[in-house]
Amino acid sequence: MIKNINELPPIKVIKLYNNKYFIIDGHNRYIAFSYIGHEKIKAEIIELEICSKDVRQDKYMKMVLRELFRKDFKNIQKNELVKIVNFLKEYILCRVKL
Image (tube, rainbow, N blue to C red):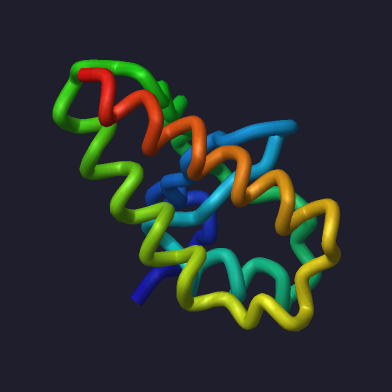
């Protein structure tokens, strides 16, 4: 049993465009913190480098894609959807070049 919320490990997020973040580990911790009224949570931030040759970047991108496709795109504003599509387009074009 956890007696102090500060004992919990940080969530892991991937930083994308325009300071947009995707949680890849710690969804339940984030929800629990929000539920009890905490506005801040410790997070490990992973920078996604679209044109990197580092294989870990592909792993992170797969996590982002998986998370994106879980979303209900009907509730996303048009400008946000355009950003997502442009981000994915840049990633795919870069991967084709490598």
